[in-house]
Length: 430
Image (tube, rainbow, N blue to C red):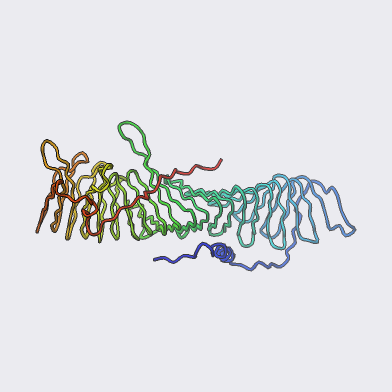
């Protein structure tokens, strides 16, 4: 089990990450900002000429840093310049653009209050305002923040980003979109380290994956959505892997689920649910210590209920006590074309099945058991039942039932009424 920082310590954690991003000291020797070009010097101020105003093709240099703009005010004593109009700052492969930047040569920090963008060899960042430290390669942006590279786009209210290793900490209305896969993550706080294939989403977090499927000539979309308190993403043996922790809710087609922990292997198309998992599928509710869902080619193929397995089917809404049940150590449920084909209960299998009389047949319920029970379906109706090894079958006509239907439950019987509601795939900010 992974141990993460609690939410109340997240701000402190983000500050620690900010410090870790900066692997160099924040105190620098004063290196003067030097003018290399200007069409004209339009004014001098103070007796010591400590303030100078330049206009036209202005170029400054400070070591490897080159600053260009239309007009500038240089504060020589402060080792600072105000750059205005088509501002471009370059250092190696990093380029900063804005219409107005205040650049401090002592701290090598660029500050913009009305739009700023940064580009390097792999990443583009823009925001309403922000600061960028050219020495540590750390940007701190606020309002309408957008980060984009070859694989993802991140939108947020605030961002701390290191252009040297492409690592980001985003907070406030965070949305991450995959560019190569139709996926998205929303949360309040996000840590993203692409070189390590590492992602951590906190608070109100949700993961989405869209599949496009053609059915009867129409194009429809099947969306997998998983929400949780925390989402952890990484690469495991070359596979894209996500772990979801606490208050997990999963929806895919007709499958709904809740649990405390889920693991998703995108390459293998499987979900592993633990921590009191429950699955709703049409009229079924499924319980076990662990539930595994397999959906190769994005179609649900099998559900495995491992340890303390229970399946209940609520078919009669007018008499809520008439609930078909099957239990065993393990239960496998096999699907064909999104419909249940077979239910197999293994190891001390037991079932209760309610029978409605038709054409003179007697109604009642059937209690049965065996080492293994097979229930085969056709058109979502029970076609036949097979009991294998040590079977027993008892039938109770309806006319001898007691008035209390609650007596006709298997020992591990349970039922849930808190099925999650569908989430909508997020839209990109305008």
